[in-house]
Structures are given as structure tokens and as C-alpha cells.
Length: 114
Length: 110
Image 1 (cartoon, rainbow over the protein chains, first blue to last red):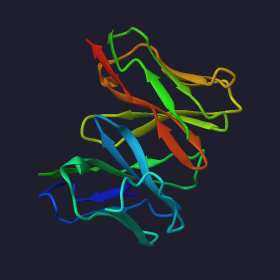
Image 2: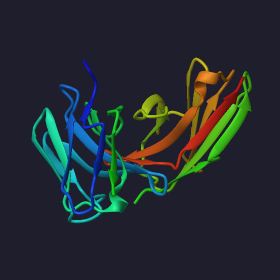
Image 3: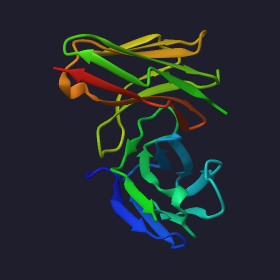
């Protein structure tokens, strides 16, 4: 398997623009997680899905953030409108089961909002 | 919610020495404690994990210990090598969610 795939790897946009990050989890994994990594806040969980259903989105910072998982092989994280403080590395991870199981991380998307 | 503290934030050792990273957690319901290694420009990768019913686990040069009573766990790397240089994260899992510590930048000097 190719592992977790994320696109784009780098995104530079201007404040106010819509940004869409994409993730393809490992085939057969039932859980998908979106994380954000910054120097100030470290690695924080934004939202996770089980069998394509959002389970906990308490980490989503604001209504400007939304995530979807239309099928088992694809998820998106959207920011609309984007702000400079959204600049971070966004990771997608997947696992076979939930707690107590290894999460496999993608390479991340480095987002810069000017 | 869960809170995980990690120390030290940076650690510099000589090649061949041992390195120890310590973490504490707050939620006694947490039952799974993985350690991740993150290299520059890459996503975190699991290196070892321990569950709440085990006190110690070892995998070659890496070992992890867990003290449930005190709510702390530690990562031990022996015979460090330059390729061990990276950022290491501890985490605690409860209800399918991982809470990460702030990370430790380990530098192994040849």
C-alpha cells in the first residue's frame, strides 16, 4: 500500500480565499483523523471519522473549518475564508480501529496564508 | 479533557549515550500510550507503544515504561546513533482520540 496520501503538499494562498486539503487513507482503515501542527500549539486533533461518519469535531477551531468524508477512500478539510493564523502543517492519519491502534500519518500539507 | 506534558523540550546527547524522555498525563481513563518519531518534512511515525495493562515494553534499543499510579510514562533510547536525531512525541489515547505532548527535539552528536 502507498500509505496515507495527502494533496497538495504545499499550498500558498491569500487571506480570504477558500482552501481545500485532500486525504486518501490506507485501504481498509475504518478511522480517519485530521491534525494541525504549529510551533505554538503543537500537534492537535481537529476531527475524526469512523466509517465515514464524523465522530468528534471538538477540535475544529471555528466555523470556517469543515471536513467531509464522502466515501471510505477520500476526505477533505476545507477552510473558508482562510486567515493568516491558519498557516500550519495539516496531517491526515488513518487506523484500522480506534483507540489502542497505530495511526499512520500522511506527509502533511504545509499551508501558508498571506 | 486529557493533558499531556512532555520533558525535556530539547535533548542533546553524544553518540552511544542513552536518552530519556518523560511524559505525564492527566486522564486516568487513558489506556494506550504511543511514541512517535517525526523527521524533518515528514509525518509522525510510530516507534513503540504501551497499553495500560503493561508496565514495560522493549524493542531493540528502545524501551517504554508506564506508571499508571503516578500517570507518567517514559521513552528510553540506548546506544544512540545520529539517525535517532528527530523530534519525538508521546501521546495518550482515550475514546479513540490521541492527545500529544509538546515534543522533544533529540540531537545526537557524532
